Length: 538
Ligand code: GLN
Image: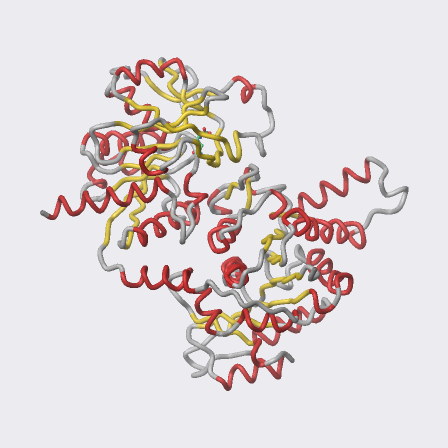
């Protein structure tokens, strides 16, 4: 058997160059060549996970199948490679120190002074190796968060520096992502920031084997050569990534640069398989779709679209499937509260995403009402299901005092309530209903039609649940619980009949959508949006 190969991705010059997309794209190229990959991200912050972080600071929290609350880059990894990540795939400084301190308390260090080197670095190396063992993968692609030169990422860089020696020179490759700016006054792209960033990396003891450059345009031969000799790397391993407005185009750019061939050559590997055409088909289909549908996303983080990353992507996937471009309109639920339903007019579909806290809730409930009454296709996710139910009970069952105890602890009708087990929990981090749970679908429902199977497994992240006490009343008024968790006796999907598409789920379907296999509920939602638009244009 081949020895496992490690690809370490670092970033230089500035942050936000897209290391996550680069790592994910490399993963896609290797998967297309028939290899298995495990993706992971090392995050230098001290939080144990991003679960308790504010979306403004961290963007979306991506939930793995096994219920870890992780960095949104893991979402890119899963979407690009099609391979699920796990709680092992996102390691933070907080987790590393937590584990080392616990070991110290248990006396595992036998009285030694516990230090960054070797104890913290050993723990980091261990975490990287474990991922590959668990999934028995050919490659581990490991992205190091932050930018070279940050104090916080030093222990991670030192750990991966040591690793090359341990696993063997030809089993580990360093890829460095930098920026080649094109200042108007200079008249040509500048390589100096790249040279400096490589110099900083060398000071830590790491010499990159490949340099990927972000730049406005494709690098010229002259610039490639300059990077090659100033940074001392092969010319074929200077990879040019010009700006693109479609992230799924990045693997195509890398393929054209023959990045996968270089990696395989570096490791002395061979592969006769190449299924990358499927990916190219997806990208061409996106480029060819001319018709548009407008989907309103009613939330409170509308000025930070990273908070809805997986939803945005799931809409793109389902759009390509239905041959349309999905134009997203972010609508502030607080604006709807202030100015009424006007902002919702002219949309082909409405989506109410997940969220926490009371702010903007009534606006979301108004959007659920509007979509139901005006027969606009609707998808509610997590908090979106809870709002759809509150709106239904207030308006259709005529119980106007309906609410969730998250927003009104003494609500007259507690339609959404916290479960007994959750009431006893004091810690905020990692204590929600998290990860995969089974959901049994009811024959003859919209959900069943799109899933096409009886039992599905979906990812959750919430504390509150639809209250069973109101199940009968809701069903008598025409509400349909098309998906339930039998074991826990919980309602997971709520839909209504006599409507083009009005479906909401307690789980997050967006985490499971992939470019080549869009999520069934998103497919149905966009299909209904297209029908709705065509009808309006008749
Ligand atoms: N705040 C709600 C709950 O905790 C919904 C959470 C969500 O939308 N992810 O149940």
